[in-house]
Image (cartoon, rainbow, N blue to C red; front, side, top):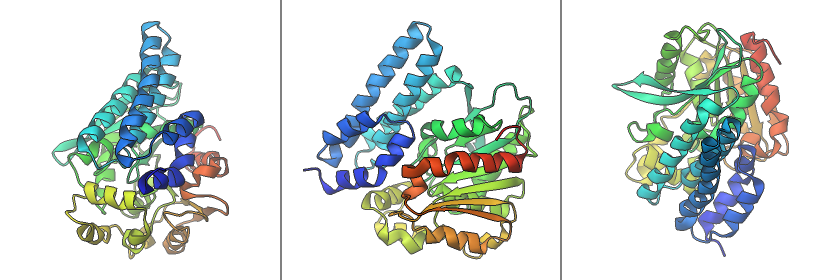
Length: 356
């Protein structure tokens, strides 16, 4: 019988894996073979390697589209090898490196293609993936904020619906996220890294810095509105299942999530992590959000209660559209058809994109 951590991962995240690109059969077969959490990363990396081999073979045969598809799938599987796997840093880093490598190999072969970018930030850099819709000279751009355990390598499915509507996407790893987790700890004042990202966008002549939207998933659903409260260059913001006050729900989070936050906030103990969690708050801040806001929450969310989204909606000073889904889980991953296209349409209208 699987241990409690494996059971928790399967129970909380099965729809997320599938909705973000992991084949259903892969999920079923890999998780059926894992009984100890300590074996999770190794098992998922083995499955990811199958997709990676297919991608490299396609590249060798000159089949660029197939290569991009296989390597993107490999990157997602490698990402889910390590996403909350903090019990073995060596294994985690190896899987993460493979996720980044596969997505980077895939980027030039995607439709539309992508570009790896490095954004100057506090004496170092934040890594991002930039994709632009085909034929667009200076498209609006949607900055994509990751969550606690998500990373830019997981974003292909969400990027594609935005790109199809004529907007560029810039998915980046912020402090404590993805490639940023090694150099920078989680910080509550996420407006600071977002400012660096927007400054970078302004430095490019191929993006319309006057039409910038912000999109955030899970803990990124806190980060995005937090940044929008301070960064007035943001024209519209989407918040997917984010907390209003992280500390208020910290003790009810899955143990894997609490442990991941402890590691990525560089807290020595869970008590220290709980104190750090109190710095992630929209209290007294959300009233400064004047741009249009689209809030998604699942009313069956077992991680971040949907009422956190209602708190945000009630506090924001600008126009708010709620998308609270009765039978949806965290980030409504079991009902993506109820919000993914709709939220992209909403963003396209607010950024003046040509398609919706």
